Image (cartoon, rainbow, N blue to C red):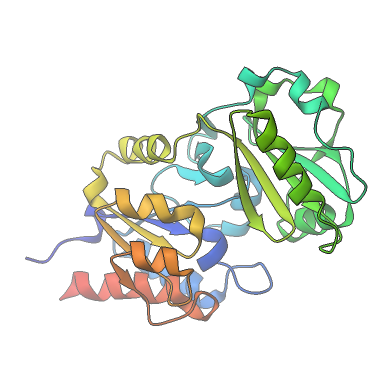
Length: 275
């Protein structure tokens, strides 16, 4: 029996699959998204970015459900203009921010519960990152920030030859602090409270969309979405996604990420719904 697109929500990896090498959304994908929406398709996104950066990148592309932003630490509804935080650093106390490394060449940014970005220390790598993602930010001091308002801490390293982040990873592990570490790139380390649950964030998206997990299709291109692939009823990975992602997915696209994996998958959904 033919099933309408409106019965499935696609949760797509914005960072890995919807942006071109220049950091912008290719026109061919925008055309497919327009067709997908016109046929009743429902889309939302997963991203490491903040709400303002994601809204800028999406432009007029509509989302049918709250997005999973800041690596899943914030479930954000663009329709309502509000977000649901999945956790914070409150348990570590406000002094946690003052103990972050004062290492030459390491920049520090905070992703906040209200969707804003605050910079404790700027460096070249962090500045490039903020400009590339069109992320507005506010320079601040640790003393002026409450840990309860912080979703994630991002550490950026200028010189890849300096093992500054590796040293901090080891130091943090030795303290036994309830913080999860995730390498977003070779020069970026993300710190997230252990209490933040990807499953809880996924459930919040499903509840807002009034759909069951079985009615969600996850399209992934990065390791950050591996857990989500196992929670959804349908899943797919880009042809060139990391091996762990491809093994966890139900299918693999023919196209690579930058070659149009997202456009291929969404267009195929449109074709299948019309048969």
